[in-house]
Length: 453
Ligand code: S3P
Image 1 (cartoon, rainbow, N blue to C red):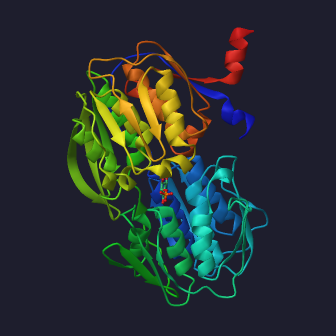
Image 2 (image 1 turned 30 degrees about the vertical axis):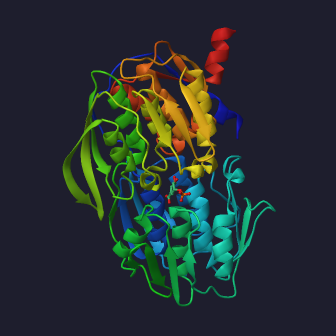
Image 3 (image 1 turned 180 degrees about the vertical axis):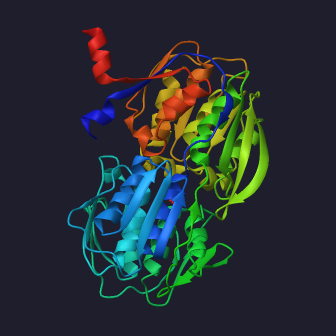
């Protein structure tokens, strides 16, 4: 973690409501895949709605370092000159993927099939995250990947003699692992198949199809054969439901709210947050459902509602895996108890999201019981208010944004520290949120020091 990453705080005045209309930035998962497949395609791909956040920019920088030319991004537009599956060049330096687990895991698979060696590095958080989950199956395919003894980055990906397809049953529901193996499968002899224990986001499969690469799905098993080609195609990226989630929760918990989020990605493998909030009593109308670039989208109109606690159905967990920081705030403001279980994965995200959210909620006066695979939250009730105070963001974008919206139901100001990584998935979050009613100010450490001095 750099010094500057610690230096940004959000200061929030308590109360307020969210009103108006907002398009949150482009989907992070789809933005990563768009760059990767465009780079490997034959021809020029025009991407619209690209997320100009640090994570997807890290993926773009990695491909530029491997000789891929791209114009932009500017206002979400990016034009990538594809080099074909065999056209990448050896990078001269380690590829620095910053905070981005998706970049590292997907690239591991893609790079395993190259004729050159590469090194993947990341920030302190990424260097703590488990990579064995991709290294083990990729090694079974013939890949040569070196990691630390604990199975963490830096990763050194060496050229393999040959990759061969495998038939792999994922031990954890992970779209990153599935995607990593499918990308390696593009370079493997024979068929690569991945079976998931529960459905996870299917953007890789959909986008491979859009680039003309045959992918076969039968139930929870997805297969492709190596040796094909990708053909450039225009890509339009919907607004990220994971970013919209903060506003879905914020408008639900803040009395008087009436907010419309436009062009939100509604892929069935991503809409757990809408399903869960509706079960809790949220008032979310799905308006103008339509297709955008092979993905379903809709406008979501959300009005304040009295939420009640629920036992979150375990089948919704992979469909809402990134939305639990926001959902925990909804649960904290609900009537009665909310129980999450079957979500041990939250402990190995950008931070330990169970512990970090439990600590922050406790600081705001909420009774919580963190568990190995989830959390029990005793809501303050529809008429209750959270306390104010200071909460640690732990350099985790989604923790920072979750506590920012909690201020809508607080009695006193809330300061969230260590928020600079919000930039990884949601550039200009504070400005956009302020535009619809969140009373948020960004403060850098230097400004606070000057005021004190
Ligand atoms: C992602 C998959 C999920 C998610 C992450 C993005 C992807 O991770 O948490 O933010 O783009 O494939 P896992 O595959 O580890 O569940």
